[in-house]
Image (cartoon, rainbow, N blue to C red; front, side, top):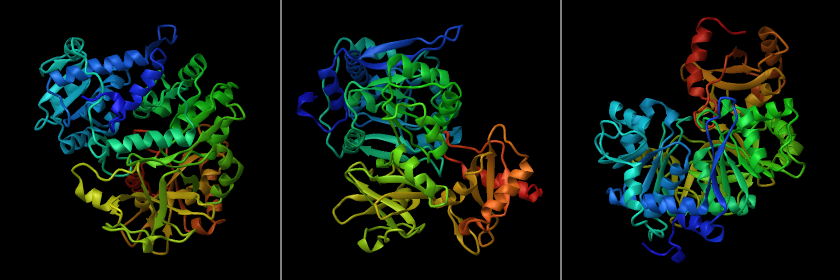
Length: 560
């Protein structure tokens, strides 16, 4: 191992830098299960504690044969151990494999087959599922269990600690910028989950883009409602507060647990999915709650409705801003815009069906728009670039852009374009256009466009028209029918206590459709009890599930 002072290309060097400047500062605060009276308590861990635990576990992993370059599944909920194991792997050059446990058993098994992990580190429940369902049975040779170890052998967390305490693994491995750092799986909300290959250089670039774009300062306090993002906090010198919630169900979070953490620890920075912000902003507005410590709120995973931004802004001090960064597992961040700009200007155009403005590209990221095609593009050519105002696919290039998917060459070919300078451009799979100010306007996923015999409809511009109705919570545009005979249908989720009958709301929406050229062909509206959403942020509408539902309803004649 080399000294951290030699600064190898490894995100763990940023953790060590935070530790050296503020060893006794609090790195992680973890909410514990409420007591019988519903009162919350928290455990606190300093940067010194986190680094020492990381060094102990790194040595323990090495002793058990989990070494540099080895792909290792990590299935551990938010905890000191989650942070320490992740950094122990990264600093040692072990390759963590992160998969959303809520993506469904079939997808989980597929992801684990594709990742070909050699080791599996997880809680007891994860190991039970691994053994019963055969996850990684052909490749996993070593395992570590956090919690009771049953019939599968391997090592326990205590085994790692026992050895690691004798000879902690100090410093960071001499990893190179191009070395494989991690495999992070997409949620699969807009297609099959894919393992995104992260090199160490991309993690380091992400840290710098986040620090630079949002002016994040060491000593700030972050409310971490999405565990993978929370991993950036110690590297940025921030205190990470993990609230009491199920991170796989942000739409069902108890607002009181969020307010308690923000107020108790004077949180300055917060990330929350649009669904989480919707829930807490409604509760906060109803109870007239103010959150004066918050300076900055980030929300991503899907477009954030302007109504949610307006409600959330009312809970914050006047100088605080909500940012909606745009990006994906494959590259983050790409662009950013503040609530002040959205509420003061762009939301008026959004409500007219112009798309959702996601801001200008962040420093170091180049964004261009290319013609829509569903086929691979092997090599970049500047002639692909569309002019300002013309809608097409969003393509990005920068030092934080990943270059491949693991064991999915066909997916890599569809998403990546080789550039003449040796770098790679990533096709976002999203549609949009650039305006005269260089801002990006998002118009929906490429795979979700509805191609009728007469025209092509794009989800976000169409849905925005109907989302202005006061009784509508959200809508999802889908195409029903055989290719060449596709018919546009809008699935509608209502607010909890609509002021009008369902029949009247549908009549209103049909009237709205006739007022805009791009929605005039939409005549079918179906009331849905709750639109299916992604498992990661509970915000992206799962349109693939809506198509068979809408097809069945129309076949039964349930439509106005």
